[in-house]
Image (cartoon, rainbow, N blue to C red; front, side, top):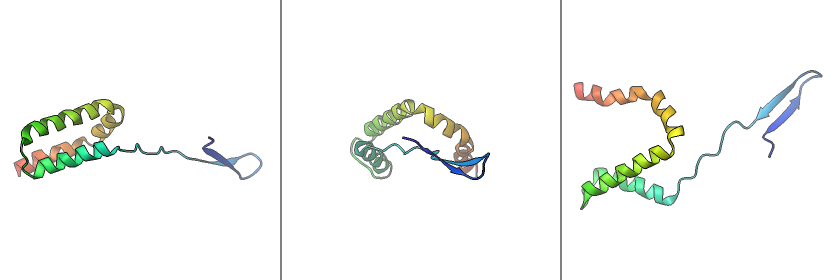
Length: 91
């Protein structure tokens, strides 16, 4: 599949239009269910909530390790956001 199309402008040059983005990864329904369970577990008291929360944290860490090539650059760019809880605690 060719993602580049040339547009001639004059004799010596041409413009090039290229598709420079990727289609995002489709999130499976079971991952969406686990994320929903995480939010539900955070705000609604459930039976066995502590072991469930630890299992979900392990799942998040596994996903972090699985997609570390994409996650680490984003975390490094967003490091000032990690200071917000500290500022909230101080104020």
